Length: 496
Picture (cartoon, rainbow, N blue to C red):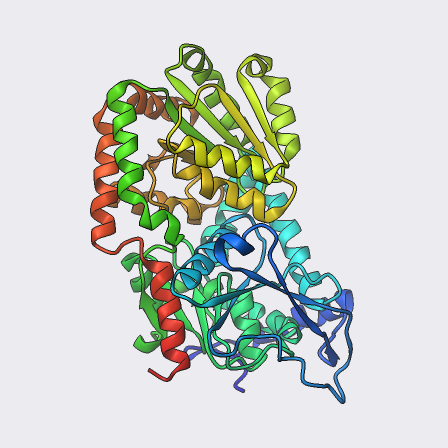
């Protein structure tokens, strides 16, 4: 195998960049160990949250032993119709894309196997990823509290730092330490990775069919996994990745081969795509009848932006009292966020119903809300990560407006109000959404956020236009990305 840290799509890295990549890998080995000689037995179990809904089976790894003399540990997998969804938890976005891929695979009759590389705590892989995840979450939270940190550190790193090919060179070396988790996975099962590390690790492990489902709308070399098929959700991203736009400063990059890159459309759960027309029709009906407008506020996986949500809730409280607005607040697995909101805004208590850590109750509420009335404030918190993320997907169908930062949710087929981003790369999700007409511009401060709330509440056309655009976008196939990714994975497996 070629050393993917030395040459990336024909772009040769300098000796300095390569030495730094080697040094980073050795630093991680010293800190977290090297289990490349260890074999981890595999166990397949039904996912307790999305197993029945989406047919998802979890790939669990047992305690490792030396790799010599391995028995056949690959018999648990359906090697004809199985597909690995390789992911990590770093924020909620990558889990959300994974759920969309699993939903599409299930709808097409395939068996989705869930491999979270950040869940195998006994492995070097998870230790490396976990340390990076902790740093990312911390940085996200600090960026929301410190303008100086955000301006001089966080925005530049997310916008330009991750954009450079030199960053990819270091990641490729670290990914070599992640490969052992795939040791006992059949090599001919397709892998769809919803973060670049599971894609890179799969390639280093010898998996023969790897699809790298690239997130966001800002091309960054961080997301390159040479040897895989890279899929993107927008044509803007396609152009940027094809030419390596800005990935070596002003230097013109050697382009990616055309066969390594594919535009698919947005990665969306099939259940949401299939119900677009009926859900949008109900939104219009509620608007026309004067029913309370339903706003879904969702906290991201880093737990940031509580302060913005607090201001939104304060503004909406009088309207909630008058039955002109209703709120869903999903704090994910951050119960402290709900506690802090209730402390900061004690008036919430009068109108609030808590749906806490009871998945069956949450599912029933989401189902009932599709046809029934909703008033007041409904808070959702789930300790389980799958429930914390998928809760938003369930509530999305019955909400009128999703209030979110322009992260992966920017691509979902629901009217959206975008609040301030976390990281410069996210702004391009809002730009794309505004261009196709299913979301607002990014509201970068509270006054502009309130202005947009007023437009949704006081006018008809703001919401109705978005609903009409969403239906039109579906007809053009814009939301079919997850289906296309799964189809392409099996085509490549079969050599087509």
